[in-house]
Length: 192
Length: 159
Image (cartoon, rainbow over all chains, first blue to last red):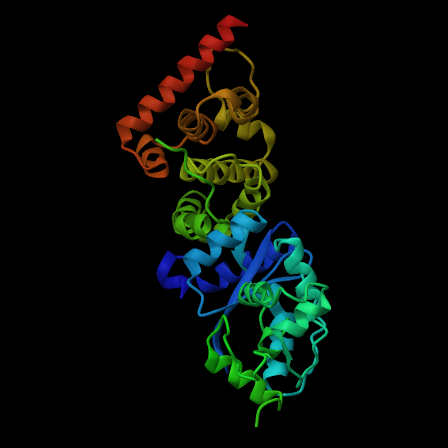
């Protein structure tokens, strides 16, 4: 791909990207996973951990956004994403029920971080409601605000906002689209 | 006109990697160019977080490529031979290699003049090559280099 686009041989291109990741100088190393069961995913890691999972990425906008939040040294560097790719594969194959990846949520506002920390405790195959999650962070009336936090979850799938549903049990909404929410809940056996 | 913000490194790399590789292959040969290519962009990456704006990135990375070439040549070749090869007359009689004189001297020059001076006198590129590196014409490259040298002479005279 890059061979055609830039005139740099693919082996040389990949060698530089791996070397760049190995320096530890990148603000964000990312990759685009083209063929997951839930479609195309952009995944990004900082020096602290996983900082981005994005459905149907528009690379131009995503890179600008990552650069604004984490710094301009944003580079596609597949070698830096090996753990992320492996854990996601295992999850999609039903062999992994919890992620061991360190997370970097520093770009999220404080309230979001609190809600996301509670979200991390919702277990595989279980669901909760926006209201219940709001109550667990001590803001029982903030169900709608919790919905916003879910919508802006920087690392969906890994932080399982798909496990949060409406009070009536309806799926309600999902940043990646309701089809994906349904697929993930079926994978986990939370929907029959 | 608003000053351009620093683009994500991916965009910078994609925009200039083909040209940097072509330049290095032309100057150092296909075999050595690969290592120099990687070194050039690793140096750029290290400095990238300190950039204050996204102007003249092409001239900037071509200057890094030229410096990488000079450093590699310096490691590989006897010092005396290199000094003879690169020595220039900037109005002084110091026989040190050009790049050693140039590096600290050119810091204060505007980016385009600095790149033109370094490429011309630090690595003896032709003006058409410098023009290609800076995205301007051969004439503009010649003018940028001579403006840079004039400015250096003036500063030297003022000291």
